[in-house]
Image 1 (cartoon, rainbow, N blue to C red):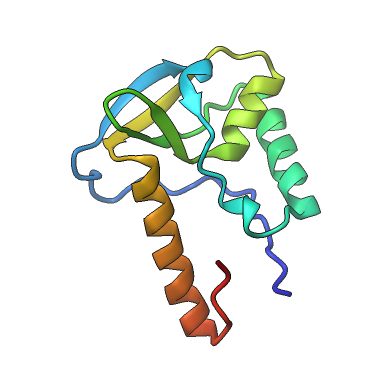
Image 2 (spheres, rainbow, N blue to C red):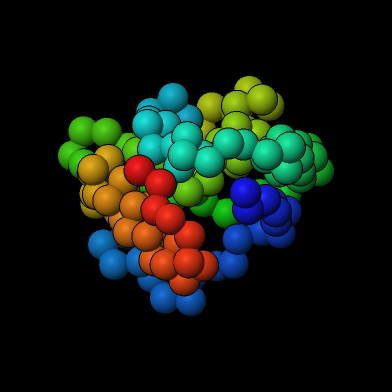
Length: 129
């Protein structure tokens, strides 16, 4: 089993804008957490450390980068930023900055499966389905 190491460094800013993306602020309650790639790979202790790191940063007044979401015309699906969202919830924050781009839950899942297929191929591991 490959052990994942959580990085507590802030995600780097995009060097180029994401096509079709728009930055805005949304209520945290509007985010759908249906896309959970961790469901395929068990969470590690580092995951809790990552959330706690963001909690500590927020308490120090740091502002985290926006999370990434997909909007299908009705729902905002969280794509990236699960640690930041959980940290904000623990601190009873109600709104979060997001970068929104068009897409569906099916798009997210298909892209994740393809990324995992390429990674597993590169590592010569069997694909988990």
